[in-house]
Image 1 (cartoon, rainbow, N blue to C red):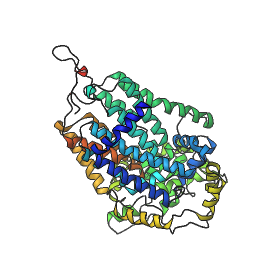
Image 2: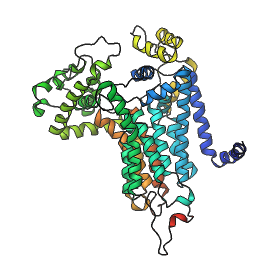
Image 3: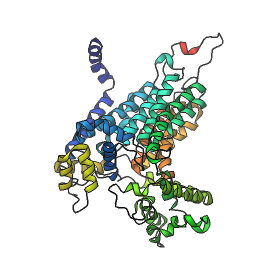
Image 4: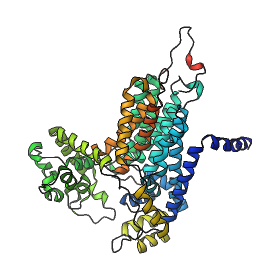
Length: 512
């Protein structure tokens, strides 16, 4: 009780010291309240939303994606409230901004600079849209930022001391859990372990982070195996990679065996729709069928023969079909490595050049009707109850018009431009390459951002939703290199005794 009173007593002073960020946080809170008033109980316009709700009710491994987010939904299921879920995710978004600000201030960045780095999280309408959607991205981003904060936040007396073995393990564990929530963060616990090793923090810390990150993944894989007979996280990695190869695969070059010829682009309906274009190269590129179309077209090979199952993904995403698709994908990439590199590069470029109007809030007047909502209604009924499901079935997705129109105008004028995103990444990389401004913290943050941008394009296709978690990481990396303070001894490096044999980690030094 006394501690609570002391904390409340110091709050006004903290708000005055950090008034720029406090004001920005307040505006961010108001924006989120407007979103909650506009779309009630939550945004459910993406098929993934209903899949997550279905998995939270059934508690059976999903063949397409790990069920980390479904476990989170299952914990909240007794409340039967999508409104509470959306509100909690909005608080997570604010917490992400607080973490960005806290880490940067802790490492010496001025308050205005730290607040500027957190601004995209607070104000970008794409961020608000995802927070209000039944989607895994916000939770995964919070886990990822928390893991990095555990590694990077220091006390003044620890400025030369690397994170302890326990902190390294906690960071790795949080990254591993984030990988189960959103697979694009899956490699980051390995990256954290590698960074600790390269920064000479000691092999014990690196192994602790690696082992702790692998623990939740191994447990999930064993649970998955009890249902599908094979130890894995999904039955989809080969199928996603196969869809990636459809944009460049040439079976005349690949020469697949007879059992893989049905997987060639020309044998898929989407591939047969390709026609020669005399327009500019960008128009030709945009007109090309996307990997998503190959993966989800019910006329493609993996969906044959047609299934009458209530949950159709189970019929397409089987272990046998996944292994078959992986064999084709490996052959295609091996035979055409330059084609694969070009396809990935083009998609990464699209992340910055073709996404300034991505993830828009649904139009208040767009009310889908006449569609088969049986699966969606069943998923919502199982999770949130019959009343919410009935509202979805009768009205579709619609917004409260005054607030909905306000958000429509806001998202048309305020957003984080893709070109600016690219400049932040390039400037951060340039700063990292300057020895006087380089720090292990900036390198780790920038590398995590790069992985979350490139990995989706390498395994399937670009989607600005996948790149959103990279924005705060890239902004943090740039803020650190622009701050220009070189950390003595490196931020993660184990200290060495001085000439008198004393350990500098036990001396008080200013935070750099």
